Length: 126
Image 1 (cartoon, rainbow, N blue to C red):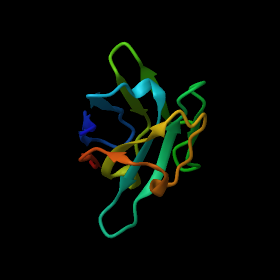
Image 2: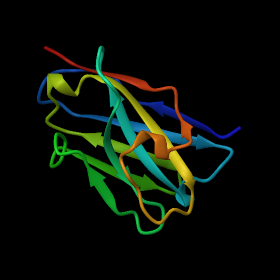
Image 3: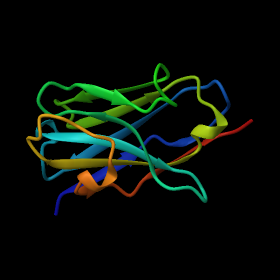
């Protein structure tokens, strides 16, 4: 079974930075579009960012644009989400997800993704 594992979450003060990682076992991430989603307590899961498989085009939710950066390291089979200027409203469980192979695009719609990690908690609080 294909597995995704998130790591790097934690507690950070407002204005701080955090980098979360999404690593894969048993398959190569480079042929899959990858999305990052988050879910805050009592709220629905929302798309944060995604990176396509073919040309690594990136997309961001309006709420994080200019503060978050998604990237790939194919040698490490890992996708990162660098989060800067964090705000309390960024708090939530962050999930990465992989789309079926070779889509040549990415979308921030959770139903489009087929493989999910277990999530990592990010808490922004003073």
